[in-house]
Length: 216
Length: 215
Image (cartoon, rainbow over all chains, first blue to last red; front, side, top):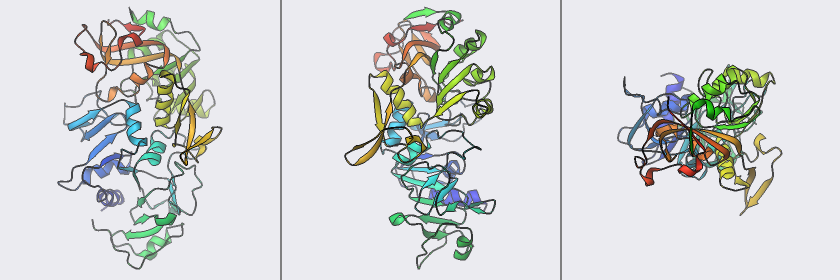
């Protein structure tokens, strides 16, 4: 199983019946492929839709029905459309149960940086800051390290997305939560030892007595 | 509401004007109005739009010919030309959170001085802004945003200027239609009064100044 699949499958286990969920671009988008059978959740696309469905079949795409990246999507039975003020009212107002976002860095206190690398990458924050500020639960789905460098850092040196800590980060090596504002290892990926996780984790991280493997 | 030709509609926009343009990555964008802004070579525009779309699409067309000098938006990462012009300091860009962007426009259209939002507290977005505590929670004061012109794309427009929008092409259009001195609309379909039932009107006709005729 490749890194992205491990992450997406594990994050999908966090979905609960009836959840209203917003998935960010990149790895988070893949989570929709692993919704457990029989579990009904609603996916929101922040450009104005609840009830996003898969990529339409050949010839069924509509130019006015797209995801937040402008790519054609479908709408499921029961879908609803709305303007951007309502879309972000849903997000900021605590109506979105769960958001899954990509990350550049997550620090020991659960702070996320994911929108800017000063001088290098300044695309704009889009909806990320509102999602982290307003969703009931925030999960970050990202690789544990990039080019051998830990993305789970002691303290973010990139600009923060929100002062509010996230709830959970799922990587290709581990699941980490932040109870009381301290990074705590909850699970390791299949075949990955705690020592291997610690070797690529810059942040100080608490290790409980029992750290099970992810069940994928 | 006045029905006008495409050429007449864009002719009322002077160089240096501020324009709000509906659309999200070019979806729900009034493409004909943008083509005409390019054809009439309107310059020094202040653009208020969610994103910069992509080169050759939506508001992206305005960056191809360097017609924008200032932009307020939330994301320009998918338009390399806009990125280059920003990094090369040919244009200035204010990047703000998307929820804040739409609420500032909503405030501008609804007679509010601004809104209080928790988004951005404790981040770079807070710089230069007033932090206000309400009930023990911190908010930023984000001021209202208006423009000289709103360029709006509807799905249906009737002869009275009532508008409705389709699917994810609604996005910022109805909010912007409230927040500009002059509102210019193109529609996928222009239909007789009554086709849009009163309950389904999303932007009431009196908000529309110019409806661009088909053709």
